[in-house]
Amino acid sequence: MKEISCMNAAESAWRKMVLILFKPFDFAKWITLGFCAWIAYLGEIRGHFNFSSFGDNHSKHKEKINAFINALNQIFNGDSGNIFTRTAEQCHISVNLLTGICAGIAVVFFIIIVISLVLAWLKSRFKFILLDNLIHDRAEIAGPWRKFKICGNSAFLWRLVLCLISMAIFMLLLIPAFSMLPWLKSMLAAKAWLKPDDTVIDCMVIDGLFVLAFGLFFALVKFFFEQFVVPVMYWSNLKAIEAWKKFLALAKVNLSTFIRYILLYIVFSLMAVGAIIIAVLATCCIGFILLAIPLVGTFVVTVLLLPVFVFFRLFGVELLAQFGSEYNIHLPPPLPQTQAIPTQTEPPALNAS
Image: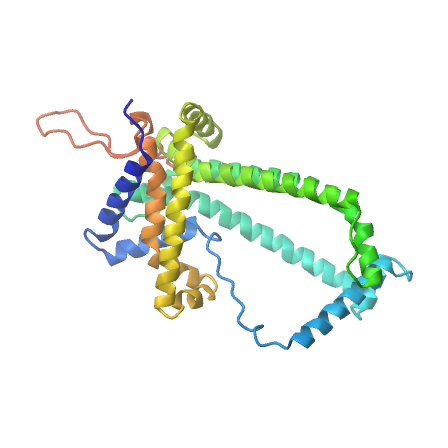
């Protein structure tokens, strides 16, 4: 096998990004690919900025903080009724109204979960639609939407299971935090900072290290899935678990290559962020203003930054292609007209609904 080069993968990804988006430039194609990237990365572009609080009076903030601390002290350390009734009392509302508010919050929370699941399902399907369009240098939605039904649904289920597992682990890691409750209650009662005892400090440090370790682990799992497992699913017509097995077998014998890829990916990401910040400052922070507009702003920003999204999507694909035809999801070159053997123009992952 020839030497695997992450830099060659980056150069190839850059060249193909330029060819797809600029040679020639097609506005309709750009918008369609931008829409696919917007859905595929929906929620991963943050656009929440608050410009209203910079001029607030510091003393007013201090009064609000003191009032909030006093209310918490009464809720946790008060002796009238239970914690629910004390909460209603501190909020100056009736218990029935607080019950209704809690029920309303539960309904809103349920709606948010349903919407999040629908968006996650759409994102999973559009990951393959975007990849298919970049591989074939086209801009279609309807056809790939039907073809990648099985792969998209498998990716969605895998992400859902991973999310549930990660939530369960982090909830378990929160259990040791209950040992801090007596310390927090004592600070609320004293309305001052109190040094925690050694047991609380040890618990906080150990729990924090576990949270950091698991957070890094799940971040790497998500990264490898997006960069490599999705292309393996696309080309080999595999579901998520089978694609993971195939990728892990490859990564096991090429660990140093994938470590170099992660480091180079971080470097390119920092370079991209720096270039974007310079561009935003040069345009009088118009980009930040756009991000402050829900959905529409993120769509506009995604379209404007489409070359960045395309490059990073193709980066992992180009690295996989160097491991041989089994991982090369590019179209084969056309055969001479004298040959009667038909060429394969679609990857076998095209799943009809």
